[in-house]
Image 1 (tube, rainbow, N blue to C red):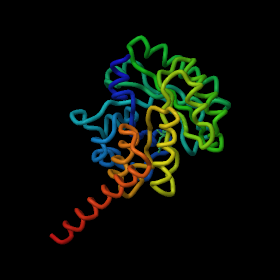
Image 2 (cartoon, protein in one colour):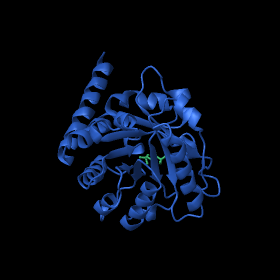
Image 3 (spheres, rainbow, N blue to C red):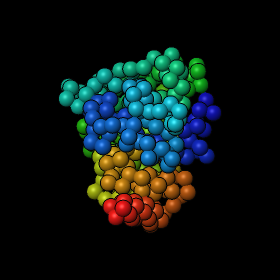
Image 4 (cartoon, rainbow, N blue to C red):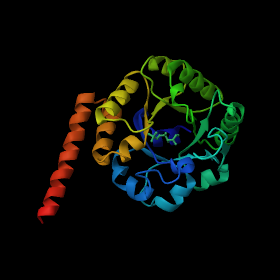
Length: 269
Ligand code: R5P
């Protein structure tokens, strides 16, 4: 268990690259070809959060990162209720795919609260036997307004009490520290829809880290940005080097300029 956790959280901190969106949204913008999207970002992230289908079809087994396997699903954006999830992947398959951890969503307060908490509990029962950490994802489906401290603290604590080794939850503007303090296992910040500016992303990540989160699980705010590599470098600096927002923005701009001058040279050639 400790060894697997340290694979995905070297030094206790983590930058997970979320690329599991297709499991309920289909070919999300920027992730139509997940293998190509992710390739240049690999040097900057600690682990990939993806489904077995993406792993099988898009990730080179010879040149990858530790995998956190998304193992809940069976719903879609166009279906009745995103919360109606089941566990999709057997423990044998999780082991066969050499996953370092697994992720499962819980939809607390929804009609499927009990079902999704049972998914988590049963997955913990199966995975603990083999030393595989389970990350609970406190999901809100389409009800994004639920992302406030009191609700998130409740979700994180319940997930940890049921045996999650890590909890992924949303950052919130007010009292995020209370969310982290009430959770006895490491808290990882989820992304959410793409922010208007890069600074906004750096600000919420930096605030969340200062308030006790151990890292991030971000997708769209990285690979939907026109400069995904520069974004990844800057976010890595916040997570692993405690870089300030200002420093992160400098790193982002440096990365962006390098790319622009490289593109300029290519045009001249
Ligand atoms: C939830 O677990 C999702 O499937 C994503 O992993 C999560 O929302 C992070 O991705 P994004 O930063 O694009 O929201």
